[in-house]
Image (cartoon, rainbow, N blue to C red; front, side, top):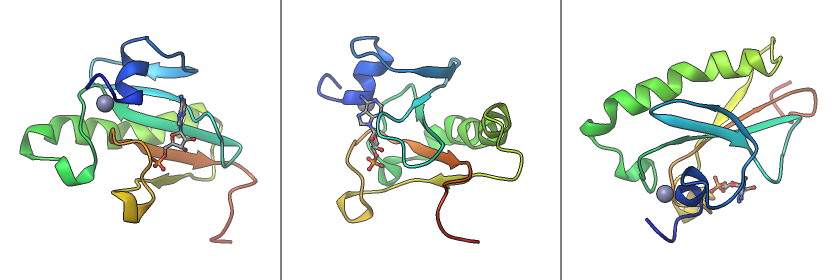
Length: 112
Ligand code: AMP
Ligand code: ZN
């Protein structure tokens, strides 16, 4: 996916503030943070959105979800965190490479 921003970050063609990576996923800081902690969690394989997830992605999806609590704790989010996946234009998705927003910290709005 030569025109995909997050594939370019994965390829090292665009810099990112990387926080964690393994054979299945990469985690980096959102360039325009909406909270004290705002990370993006992406699969190494290009999946455009949640709409394109199939059975062949079961291992990747499970792996990403299971890493979230560990990543949150490493960020010092002891009281919890928020995960957002925007899907499609109607869902507010701007970058069409599947990503989970991991948000937390004292400035997190709502749900008081
Ligand atoms: P979404 O609306 O779910 O597609 O979110 C895309 C997110 O990617 C936004 O929160 C942007 O701030 C973030 N973003 C865009 N470009 C970059 C970049 N080069 N590095 C890090 N985050 C980015
Ligand atoms: Zn991509």
